[in-house]
Image (cartoon, rainbow, N blue to C red):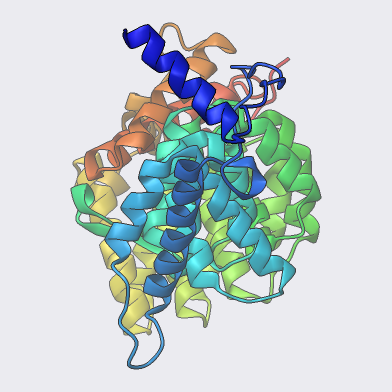
Length: 452
């Protein structure tokens, strides 16, 4: 009955003129093809995500800049969190926003700095190239503390991809950072030394290129300091050239570098600077001669103890004490007895008292010694002073040098007062080891003799 009724209804509908349903002739759907839900072929969810990221960037930028007067400043932390959660998409959107700023020639250094640091949080060394490019266009003093700590984290990876951040950090001479573990503030050039020292010897080739090709005097000066403290011999010819022809900070760092290397060919270069008309060149040359460690320098320092420049006079006395000889001690004794300048007399008295304390002698006992005995006593002082830096088993280059530099990198990375003290000890050992390649006595000696 039900079947008859259903047929009757169909007949009735047809009879009443109803149009039958057309046959579906469309091809079957391809399950691999997803329907488009909006512009750019993005799904509704993807469009919503893209909009959220764009809004977060706008909010982040407004928050960084403080917003307009009487405008409610967006929550920077919330915007930052959104971009961090967006990961790679957030990083891409940030870089696109930065490119748009550049295309419009708009200045917004604060946002650029904040964006670069956010890129580091998102992608680490994978974003180092982009971060370095940003830093090349803005003053790093905007947030030098975060620049330093993020670059230090990058340096600890020893990943070549981190180098753009390290290179960009070299240009900043005015930034300073507080080191909690050391309870101190550090500034350039120590900041650059720590960062590149942490990265280690694999960065020396890059620094060598900077030394030869950079137009940034701050970067060149920092490269000189870092490479010379590592005993990087390939850079010595360029540093020798800069010590002769450079100006200002570059010349000062190059002079100190020649002192650290202590090469037999460079003694006269340092001595010649003692006749400069610039006190800063003279005092730096004296410091470099102390590093160089040749007692022959004392005869050139004695005349400077009567300089009319107090800073030169004090530096000369310091150099004479470090490069102590019987002649230096006799000159200081004469000064403390006969000099009419009370300040100079006081300095000479301090010199003699400190030297006699090391000798464990009174002046009459010392004065009664024969010349050869005085010389022996003084050399014993020098041997005692540098006992901790003498040649150690396993130090032979090149394996020993590379091992020392990598061990020193771990010390730099700790960034503490104790680690800085340990770095100084390592630097002396590195200096002595490096010198064994070209001078008979790496430490203080009475006349540097080249190796055969």
